[in-house]
Length: 343
Image (tube, rainbow, N blue to C red; front, top):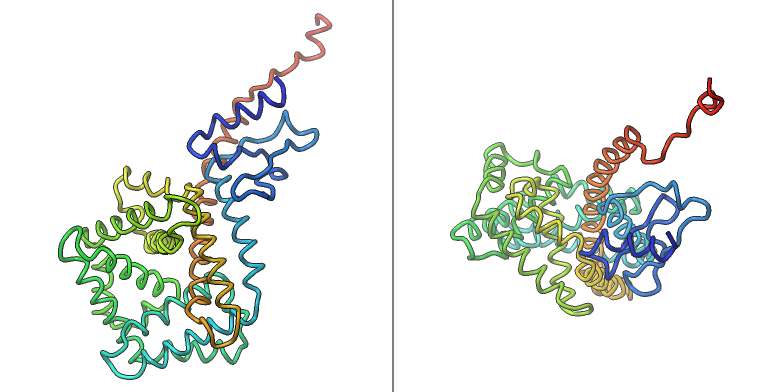
């Protein structure tokens, strides 16, 4: 079989993403740097074409996410970007801690921003003084109460009827996932904790969040460079489905549909372009475009969580396949020497 035949065979295994992803083999040759978006250049490792392990689609797509994450982190090392995100968090803390029942949206954004910094490991890049200041905010009872009220309002609005207030359903999941990521659920009263848990059991809220995800995914996947904000929102909701555990509560058909979103290269590319834009805007000057700075970390957070989800899923599939290969080797075992000598 020629090298060209091998590459053709590999491409046929992944027709669903064949225009964007080539099946790579082994640890040394998976998803090398691309000069044209999501079209990585593929080469067989020298001397390893016959014995390479065949990795799952999930593992290869996780590599694709890893590539985007590493590129994003290089851009996001800018100290101005981190300072602006910290400023965004501070500003919303001040607003959300003023009076009970006021600026409840600002209170919830505090937890969203903190969640993004923690899950991307950028929280540790802040000075100890700033870390301690942020931690002290989480003890503020007014901030907690207002974040709870904002979540309560979004959850109630989106639980009235299927197809109604679907954006509120996503907002509710975003806030719950942020509270989970920041280990803040335990700070609420038991009654409040029980109510939050009941939101995750509400089938109407779940259906509406799913419909909102469908809409943003459809819009964000139409064409590269278009509707990048929808792509950003889609990834935030995907992040929320994974961190809240709601993904497993969907029907198998809906789970498969969501998995197809994770594999959609146009959606990923548009979300990445949105991240690039937010990073650029948020890095221009301290105190300027603080919302863009925060949004960039939010997108990176979603990428990292989805990458880990795919990596774990792919590893399970790969381990099972490699175990089967070990038990059922395809190569013929040569006869023992004594057989050839007629003994």
